[in-house]
Image 1 (cartoon, one colour):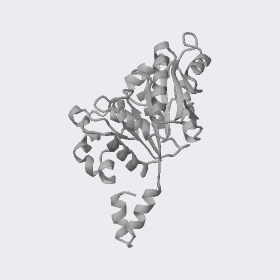
Image 2 (tube, one colour):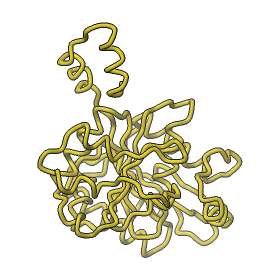
Image 3 (cartoon, rainbow, N blue to C red):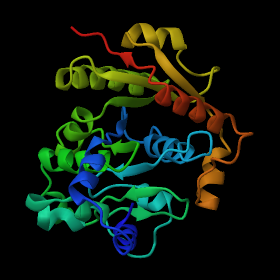
Image 4 (cartoon, helix red, strand yellow):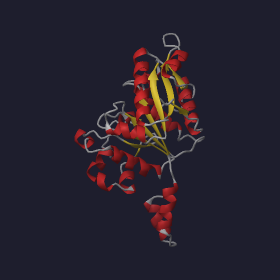
Length: 278
């Protein structure tokens, strides 16, 4: 219920606002963080489509997508937001007094119907964010959305990365079936478990080509974690995505979209896979 709806209801009958707030606080959305083993593995593409597919009729979830790549995010470009929009940077001056209203004020409704919080372009504003600030923003969003998807940078020294990892209920790690990506993924997994023991992990192999890729069983043996989803290589996909500048969720004939949809089922069913603890 938005502020306008509350006012309209108040015009007819009195309501207990304290009771209204208690109901809000009982809502606790699931936070799903997506992070790539390195740059360019397709994390933003997958994050955008996972969020969009959660809006489909069969799920009917209220979701928000948050770009934590502060100062260097691509979510804004995915949704072709060329006009000036609000973003996380608008909260930089009020981080000590964040509220439900101020956080909701920077949520943008995109042309694809997805609610999103974009990364700030101003690097000076980026420096203001501490890990605790990101946590507070996530906690506020939990009370309004069933799913909060975080596009997390893979630079583990950043406050936004630490917050994204530490405060996600589940993590999706995206990697490629290539030596450098798998090696980097192994390092990332070790770092994540040092941050967060017993982390719930979904390992996703993107752009998989069975002819040239490292065999899946070898990847699982090396990383010591089962693969949750394999997304096949599709050489035409990038061209379609770039030319149309829109999400491809309605293209059920694409094996890539079908695979990402399977990933949504896994998240929705809470079939969590735990990384082995040392």
